[in-house]
Image 1: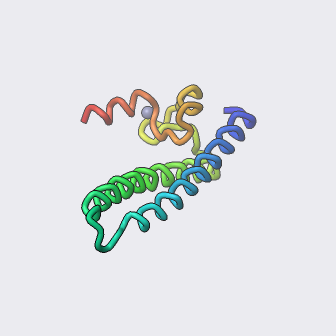
Image 2: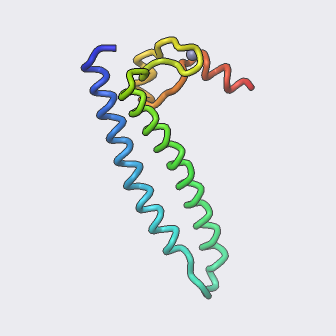
Image 3: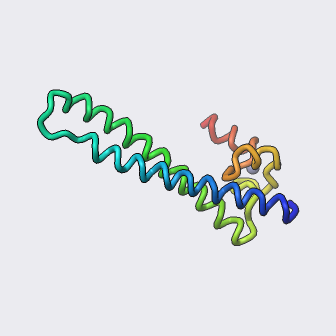
Length: 112
Ligand SMILES: [Zn+2]
């Protein structure tokens, strides 16, 4: 992979990281606000808070993947499949800059 492409993907990853961080902050606030103590809506608010917490979890996983990808850029292993060591296609990285596996290995994993 050439420097320019790598740089571009790195910037993209950093932006995703920033966006996710911001979203998680907002979600965190909403989760705290969705907790009325003695309202009739307490139950539905509780359910809504559950959904928000679920989203929060998904973003936590995603942000970790982004951080790992940035680490791999740092140590030079970025762009290679963690399973087979082959280079991940650039089209795939452009669509999902924190992809860890090539399409083949990912499909293998999903079969299991
Ligand atoms: Zn692979």
